[in-house]
Length: 356
Image 1: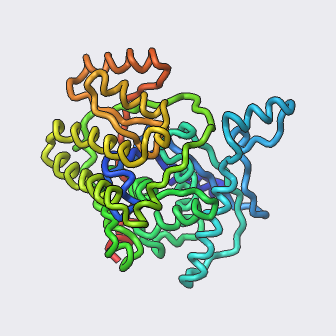
Image 2: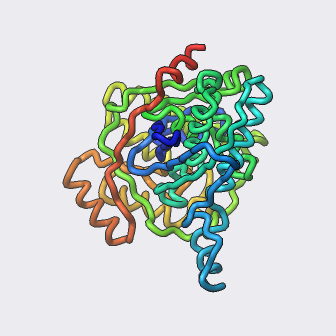
């Protein structure tokens, strides 16, 4: 966070990779995720006479040269920008403070944002904007010490749920905490505490990892999956398989701590294979599956970073294998970049709330 001479508050929230165990976070499972410095969302807040939410000149475009540009824009980018996200998190933040007798001063502000997180990449672009905005509010109103770190992911998720975005807590925990985090969303903790158990891990335990993604994805949507309803109905296959996915995170935590990267590679592959069994190829999408298969073609381990749009890959054989993967990705029209994990940025006040 930085404050300039004109009292501007700035916060960044970094993209995240769902590394192991996803998507079991919404099924009382366990996951490991980490933040990365390659991509981030930035929110600026400055005091002003009126309360203003500024549209982004690109992501909230409302002026067009022609009806062709408007229609083409909607086909490629969809309907939604970041303004709605900023409004939703302010509403959730305000209501939380009101319900918990946290007094807010009455100074107005102007809020603006920017982001370079690739669209539809499964790297938590929307929650990045929301997380950065929440951090701005915590400092603007000087209430950071009053809202526990564990609670903040719930507020971010609640803001997205306001807008009909279906997601789990994993992404929001990763962006609030930063660094590498092991998460346990067991039902007992969720019911008793309202949140899971979150354990920061040593970021240096991660091996070199790579991101594969599509530079310009289409906004075609995904085939509806019935996995959630089947799980709620107690479908034996879905329940048992999702438990296997959750256990991958637990095994992965041990593999990382022991630096057993051969085991880690097998767990990454198993994570994707189980997801594919449950959701089916139609729901996963041809392009997403192709990214995984290209990595496996050269012997790299690979899985989704989220629900699709990007893949995290690990090349156990090193530089020569990475070069093979680069060539395959280039031929297929995919982008391949080395991931740069980003350490936790929790400050002293945040750490004190963890002990409350």
